Image (cartoon, rainbow, N blue to C red):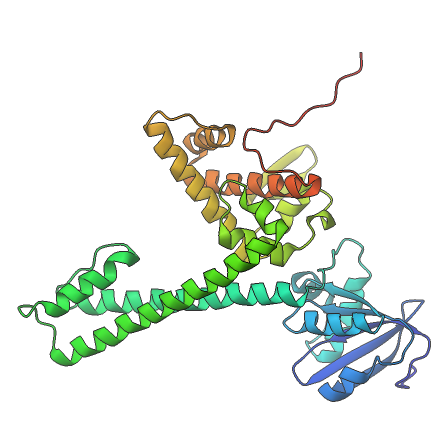
Length: 360
């Protein structure tokens, strides 16, 4: 194997990204690895300067989008492959060298759909969502801590995050309970932690609203039932162009909202949803579907008119249960969102697809 670092015959480079050390596998037009390099961060940043355009293949990990933008500005083609699709192609002991070779094998598979390189703004919005989830986890942990500590002294906090602070303050003002004075001061500090997390979440939601106000795609997505500020901005930033999926079914499948299939011969069996793809997006869509189901049940109980989607969801919930109906509704919402984006139309819950006329 040619071990020269220039590899003039190479047309593709498979790159195993890391924090400080990068493994490169140079591949020629015949698909053979003709050279390898192991570079530090500073050398890697300059290795593709002043070179003829190459096809650069990387795994879609934390820093891949940064490097993808950098190398695209130099005129190179960049492909980011999903990590779960690359993993089966690493057949040997896990090393950087094996990872780079496995990445090239995955790049040869036409069935693997590359992840688009995100813009700086898209990554920024995703960062806001991750930060909000961090603060939400802190708030939840603090609330659970308060519930557990107070329960040991016979104080029960009602369900609901909004009821925690009044209940804790009432317990602290009650001189007849058994709460020690030292613990009372600590509980006040935990309440401050909750308040700080809530302020941080509110500030992030303000920034997300500012993004939504200037992003037309987010505004179109927001018109769908079960889609709010978080779902609309997360979908817009994470998915980007919906047209990279050939159909709504492919889009729902990419989000892990389609059932697993176990078929053989004439026997076809469908199982649970695959749960592949972005867990956060799938969770948001399912939570939105649950909200639609709850509002439909309330409207039905008060004899209010239901749109086609609500009526369908209620009938499905009665047949297969609330949770399965929520996932099915999330699947339907994902498909409709793709269709609305594909045709650049507003989301219509009463829309009925026009079937082509049958020739006689």
